[in-house]
Length: 89
Image (cartoon, rainbow, N blue to C red; front, side, top):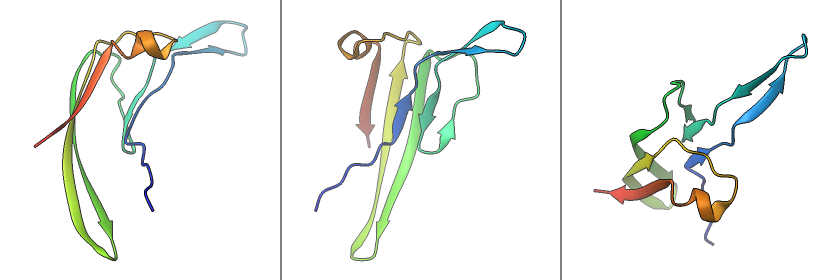
């Protein structure tokens, strides 16, 4: 049985209404594993190391490198040119 695990998420920017009728735009969020980027500057390169453990399998460790230009595009075909994710050694 094969399953998928989401390890990297880049969320869309959101418009949030405040009680005084003002609208504030929250920027995109980068979430790697369970860690959310708290910086306001998003373009750059991120590195993460993951370990997978199971009862009937030896542990597996792998590293990823993610580069994002900090630009959000609503269509996947356009957005996919804005970032790169690759497994590193």
